[in-house]
Length: 378
Image (cartoon, helix red, strand yellow):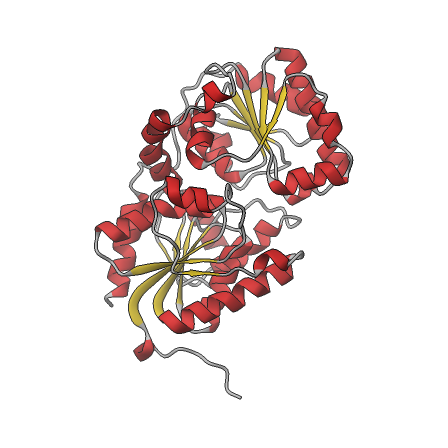
């Protein structure tokens, strides 16, 4: 039986936007709004990678985005990267075969984006990668595998910075490269006023601006290791004792599961001043981040958001694919041991919040939408 590849004459003048994770929804939301404003035909496909209310539906509601036209509901059954990616590819292929988009847009480095890029490429569709060219050079990270593979099979690549563009050139990618700036700047600028107006999270948690630390941790290399996760928890204990300020930790479902499996949840709950809370909606989290004294995180997206908001950041990893945040003085990469984390916190708190945002002017969405619209009509 012949393998199905869509012919150019079969395709519609439509763009498919692939989402499936909280960061992806946030970062692609400005692009969706820009396409809609310009009257460009598009539809949203949800891979189902995140499927809890807080990690998924709430973001669509808060950001006032249209519901996905297609959604895959079987991914939650997969427990391994390969199985999860395969289930998403199958669902995406079905959607693409039905809608026949000319261009498929993916944004970032999650399994969602690799699945979207592979499903599109195998059907002969053009792939556009928002946030192309990021590199941690850490081959232990599944995200590093994903971003490298996506970049090499993309027709159009939108690096956020000159450094990301140079990474693509050094990797000898074949697609067309266009620096756009980072859509996270657009998202932060668009939504911060709304967050300040709507969110009451500081009152709910009895917090005062710049009088608390914020923590996030969900990376596989951190939370899937009992020793590493225990080091992070101990670091938070030391930070609280040193500064006598609340440490707010919205727990990612993956992290909570590991705390329970490793019998660390009770230890974490006994730490005075450590507030373990459920995952937050985007507007509440943005407000919490904007008002924090400092954020400790292993999230690449939060490193960017903190930099844009001029909130000092300590990265709980050995490396970062956002070196621009370090270069401008907004971030320190500390690793996961208590002594290094505490030293990094001290150093970042001594810095003035005067760094320059390296991720663009907040108009990335317009550049991307214009570029895609031109290619859609060609």
